[in-house]
Amino acid sequence: MITFTLNGLEVQVPEGYTVLEACKFYGIDVPTLCYEEGLSPYGGCRLCLVQIGDGENSKLVSSCTYPVEEGLVVRTNTKRVISARKMMIELLVSICPSSKTIQDLAAKFNVRKVRFPVRHEDCVLCGRCVRMCKEQMQSGAIGFVERGYKKKIMTPFNIQSEVCRLCGGCIYICPACQLRCQGPDAKTDLCSGCLSLEPTCTNVHEDLQCWMGTTGDCGTCEGRPEQMTTRDAKRKTQNAKKKQKGA
Image (tube, rainbow, N blue to C red; front, side, top):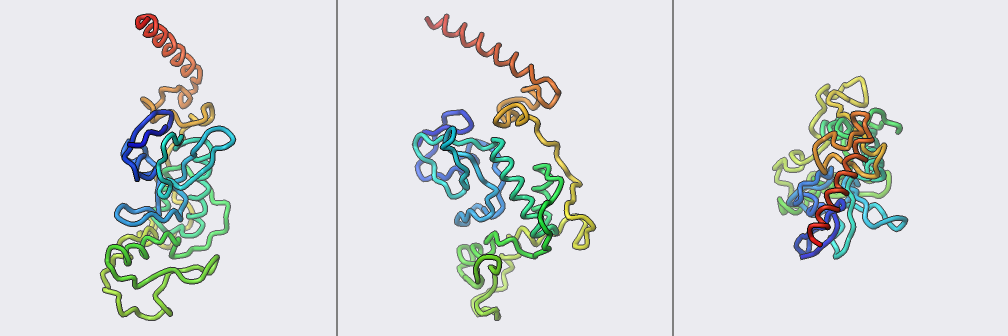
C-alpha cells in the first residue's frame, strides 16, 4: 500500500493507482472529459487537474495519468486548480458550444462567460472514440491525423475503413454528439439553464471547505467567515483536553 496526503488527510491506496483513481476511491469528485473507465488514460482535456506538492514547488498535473507516489501531497480544490478548470471549460465551450456534456460542466462550475472566439466545431479531440474503437472494439478504424490546429480524427486517407464494424461505439462515447437542451441553433454560446452557485470558500480559504463537513459549516456562504475562527477555536480546545487526559 502507498501512503500519501489527499486534501490534508493521510490515506492509503494500492500500488499502481493513479491520483484520479485514488480520488474516486475516497469519494472526491474530480471532473473529467477525455477519461472513460475501461479505456487507457489520455490526459488531453486537462479538466482533471490537481495540485501536487507544497509551496512554490507545487504544480498542476492531470490526475488521470499521474501515478500515486509515497509521500505525495495532493490537493484537488485549490484556487489555482479551480481557476485552471474553469479556463479549460471556457475553451471547450468555445470549441463546441452545442455539446450538452460541456454545457453541463460549464453550469456546474459556474462559468458565466466565454472569452475566446467561438468556433462551433463538432469535435473537441478528447480521443475517446479513437480509444473505444481500438481498445474495446479491437478495430482501430479511426485515429488522429495532422498536428497542431490542423489535428483531427478520421479514417486512413479519409475513405471508408474496411475494418469498421459500424457498431456506433464512437458515437455512443462521444461527449460532443449529445446536443444541448436548446438544440443546434441555440442563440447563446452558454446555456446557463442549470447554473450552480459558486462556492465562496476560496474567497477566504485556500481550498474548498464544503467537502470536509456540512455545506455552510465554514460560514463564508452565509457571510459569517468568523464562524470558521470559532470552529477552529473549539477544535483546539477539544484537542487540548484530549492531550491533558492522555497525559
